[in-house]
Amino acid sequence: MIVYVMESSARGTGATMTDCGTASVIRPVAPERISLAGVVLALVAVLSVSTSAVFIRLAGQVSPYEIAFWRLVVASAVLAPAVWLTGAWPAVRAVGLRRFALYGAILSAHFITYNLGLRYAPVAHVLPLIYTSTIFIAILSAVVLREPLRRAQLAGIGVVIAGAGILAGFEPRFDPRVLLGDGFAVLSAITFALYSMVGRQQRQRVPLFGYAVGVYAMAALWTAPLAALAAWSAADPGIASPSRYSLQVVLSLLALGLIPNAVGHTLYNASVRRLNAAVANVLFTQEVTGAIVLAWLILGEAPTTNALVGAAVMLAGILVVLLR
Image 1 (cartoon, one colour):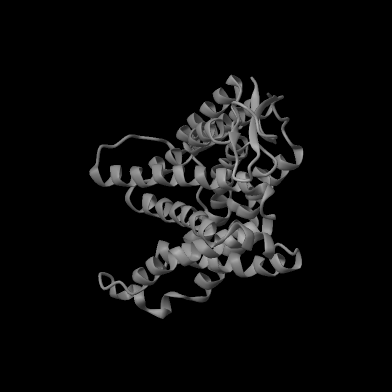
Image 2 (cartoon, one colour):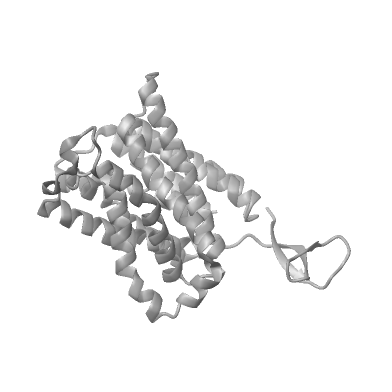
C-alpha cells in the first residue's frame, strides 16, 4: 500500500498553495517501518497507565471530576520544570494559546466522558467501546495524516477489539441508563482518537515536554469548573466535606497524576511521535490487561476466564499489527 506525504515546492500548476506562498505537492513514499523505540515507549506507557484503575479506586471518596482535575494538575506541576530546562517554552508560545486550549479540551473531554461512562454503564460495556478508538484512529490516520494501514493490520485491530469484548464479558443490555453510559464511552473513544492524532501532528512543532505540559494544564483549566461544581454539589451535601481528602485519597491522587499521567500519557505522546497513531493505540489497549493483573495483586480481584481469554486474543491481534 502506498503512503503519500506533502512537500513544499515552487509555485506550479495543479498544486495547492500554502500560507507561505509555496506549493504543496504529493509524493508517494514506502510504508514506514515499525519503530522499536516507539514500541518500547508505548509498552512502558501501558505499564504506567495500567495503575490508574487501582489509584482511582483508592481515591473513590471524591468525584470523578475532581479525580480528573487533580491528576492533570499534578502531572502539569511535575513536568513544568522540564519545559524550562529543555528550552521548550518558545515552541509552546509559537503554537499559541488557542491551539493548546483546543487540545486541552479534547483531553479533558476524554477523561470526563470515560468517568461518566463508568457511572452509567457497567465496565463490560464501557471498556470494549473505549477501545473502538482504534477504529476512529485508523480512519483519521488515513484521511488526515495519510497513513493508511495494510489489510492485515486492519484485521489485527479488529481482533484486538474482539479480544477487549471477550475480556470484559460484553453482555448487551437495552437499559436507557446503560445506553447513556455507552454513548459517553463512545465519545471517550472518539476524543482519545483525536488526542492521539493531535499528538502525532504536533511532533515536529513542539518538544514533547512542552506539548505535554501545555495540554495537561489547559485540560485542568477546562476540568476545574466541573470539579468545583461536583465538590460543592447541593445534591450530595457530604461531597463538599474536606474530610473526604484522607491521606489515602491524597496519596492516590498524587500517584495518579505522577505515574499514569506524567509518565504514562507523556510516554504515549512520545510513542505516537515514532509510530503510526493506530499502532500505538493498539498497544495502549493492553492497559486493560495490566489493570486486571494489578487489581488481582493489589485489590484481590482475581481475573475471570473471560479476562484471560480476552487478553490472549488481544495479544494475538497486536502481533498481527506489529508483524506486518
